[in-house]
Image (cartoon, rainbow, N blue to C red; front, top):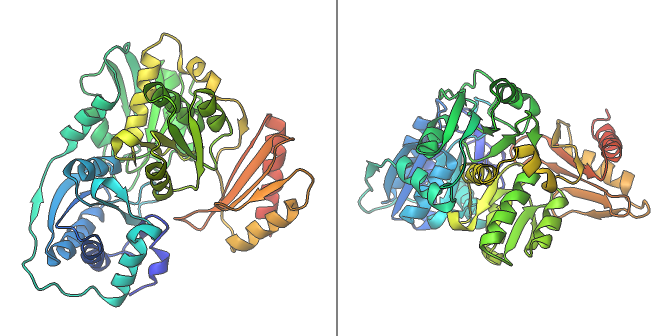
Length: 451
């Protein structure tokens, strides 16, 4: 057995197929998952990667070998799997590597009700059991059945957002050959939307561009199509369609922090005084706007298991990450890019102005966006940056998640953190003006990338 430390991440399992993750490993994980959760039944779904079906089938063999039944939902997005887990009240497993390149695959696991399984909530125990060997089960094996949940998923989402009075909208959607191409037509059915599809063909080799819309180059086709067609808005989903990025009517990329702030105000209008969770790399505008609308902002680490746990602890109505993961109390505290997209479409369609004008009040600061650097030693590079800024007048440092450095009086901050899924350091910087942000960004990148 290979080094499980390489594929068991903070909140999922992910690795290169078949070198790091193969059907044998998936079968062992399926058996251990049933043991750790005590599940009598498990629901699964998978993305369009060539390796996803063999991995899902192997997981089912492992789960049924421990006496649990397996309900296969088949092709779906990660948030469709969360819907299945929540509505069926059973643990779930999604087979996807999300935005990673084609050679990767992985598992996202949840307990009944879409409750998270991360390093501190079961994933460590699963890893340890796989390493030691899952004990044999001496009872009757479980059975495998199939169930189509796509229609129920689409109908459920539309009960959570009032779209009854929106004006007709032209919407370009770039599915990146990922699962958005499977789910968007069902969700948008019956809405006054003129859909312009880009790359809806399911293809896990990603022939047009990587299904990772956080990288600006992967949004260029969407931006061009929005301008070309005169669309009201553009939406881009990642490979498993749990994240959604937005482009306005000018073809300009909208910060996920602005979307977080917009959706937060809508949720606070329905649930006054509620808590809103945001991770530590969202714009400073998010907690400001939440407070201004009578909500309580709650800051947390990056990553879906941390966000979900904090939302459950605080009863938060909504949570947003700068990576364009959006979480909803009414959706079992789980994340759904599609549900966030419906909120944006509702907000846009309920008034007559363009999206850029609607979002103007939610964009207050100059931001770098996420910048990735591949370095030989992540810890050493981060320590070098910390040493360079420590002791400067007015500078504050915290290490809740990676390295966050800021100077409130000068109006800037940055966060430098290692990726949980790739050998990268991720930088996010923000300031009150573009020049200050650019200077901080350049200084940190010079230190990180110094040979």
